Image (tube, rainbow, N blue to C red):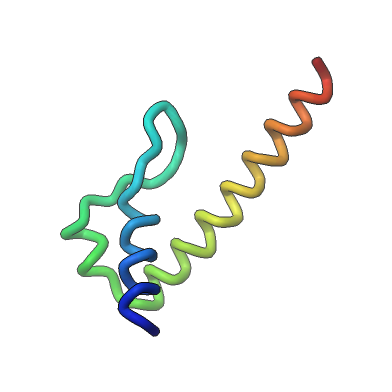
Length: 63
């Protein structure tokens, strides 16, 4: 794992889009996660974002 990959992972766990959904783990908590848990959360976040994007696309087509 590169330093950039590690930093990006922390960013994704801690970032919370204004008005949007997502995790907003405090940086200190995210840094204490074991790598396997962090990787699982990142994968799950990606799945959730894809699911939400698909739902938004479907809703937009109904209008």
